[in-house]
Image 1 (cartoon, rainbow, N blue to C red):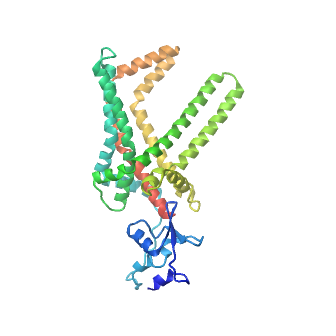
Image 2: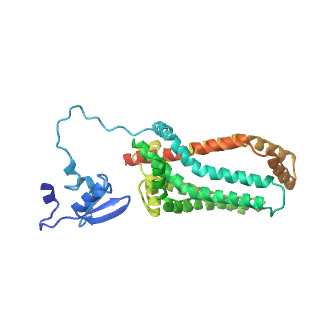
Image 3: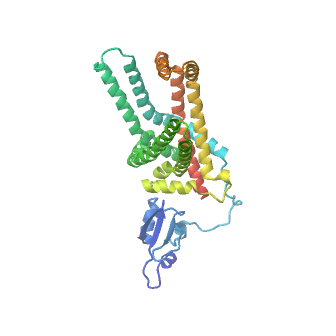
Length: 377
């Protein structure tokens, strides 16, 4: 009764509140509506809130009669209160990543196979079309080519489901809960339109920036001895590197906000930028930005090492051909013949499959980093 009276103004009319969740405002809502939202899990104590007729923001935990009604009476503690645990270090985040991956290994592998198996099937079909002899109109060749194209499209379609599935599985395991594989898939499919739109935008921008860099390289090659064109191309290249790095930083956490915060496309990008640039009160190596960049760098180094190991023989052969052949056309022909004669490389296939199986690690690491960064904020 006291809390009910505290939520009424002098005229006896109930006060209404506005709640901010993931950057979006909801309300005005009465205390009864807020209690319904709380029971549905839509309002948490850490969410921002303010009176509808005021500009000062506070926390939902401070709304009289909303969360304090559930607080038990204060009793003397039976044991000393433990101080809050300190933030996890980078090594602890990596250890938690490996533990999470080991706990849900089978589910992560099955989720990865949804993307990998269509890609492998398409590659084998494309390889079969290259080795098949006969007319271009041969039905078997056309069927294999169509199958390879369909598998490629299916792999692209399943990619947003894979992204959302990694977020959901990691969050459930980190919270000490277990979720069934098909229940996770059903939940991940709900995010498909949003994740697809974000993938088209994010990967599309990266593709355009790479094309921009290739055009700058072509400008330098075509410039010849023109110093002005060379300096202009170098200036454009510096601008391209700056834009690439800036955009890369701003979209570090878009997957987490799109799935875990259920944010819209625009809100996911905006909140990702805010989180990436947060933590100025922390040491530089503890900030979300530098931890995320280090995680991405470790993964890129691993991918590069896998590529170098699998293609080492081809690179050596290509280098030798480059040193001994002066005619570019003859060099290209020799490289093509060498690639065709190489055929199916078991080592490259195994290493590529290993990379795909371990690929959820980077998604898990970013989810754990996101949870840790949000907790610190």
